[in-house]
Length: 169
Image (cartoon, rainbow, N blue to C red; front, side):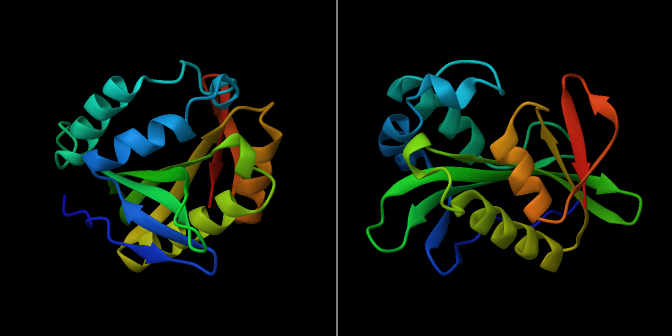
């Protein structure tokens, strides 16, 4: 499988930077909020744990044969402050490539459209790089992420993906 490599993307209010290990220190503070894990599980990672995770993610392609990981850190353009991330897991699909996408915005920046803006930029970029199918898994009680999925033009499908609803473009 030949998947694209993440590159810097810009929107009206954001810069999406491809994830590197050096992002871990500043992102640990951004993601240090238990409320971000309400629907995705887990707990905030320490700076050292996040650095180890970013080392793994930034090391290159996924260790799984037919899968590629793309991750971007979101920065507000006006002050370069990191506010979250978007990610895509690329796999082969019958008519090209499929991306399973996700978005996380730090609590103080939720409700301002940043997740939708960033995910829309990522989605357009993915489609421009041969991704023909887009899916996202969203917990049914996660109203903010459900709203983002709808704004992106995704539609809920059956069956449920475990405890989450699979949304498809």
